[in-house]
Length: 164
Image 1 (cartoon, rainbow, N blue to C red):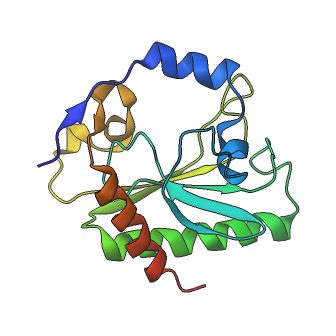
Image 2: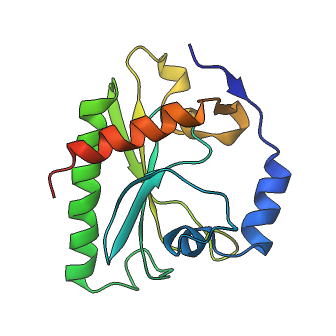
């Protein structure tokens, strides 16, 4: 059983509102920015494990280029290409991590975390209904304390399952 640790939500919110765009920093492989475990990347998108996972195998997918409107900043073809990638990543996660259901959603705000991105969050089997859905992905419940080596290996395994 992986332990949970609390996260300073006020500090997190402040960093998302005043810091650089975390997705642009990750896409640029900025060595001065906290490193993330990449699952896949190409010229159009990046896929990596969530640095603050509430669920094991929680992945983020984002366009490499800074875009804010989750639909309005993409052509139909660009959007559908991203959705195809999201599907493929979700299937890879589902095959790698015990999963009752895959949650796919897009959060963000013009006030912080404005770079469009999608969350792929695998709900493990047996989670009581009251702890599912929004409850399963709330930072207030803490994040999983997973060793970096385990995260690196999980990212590799999910990446190998992608059929791109």
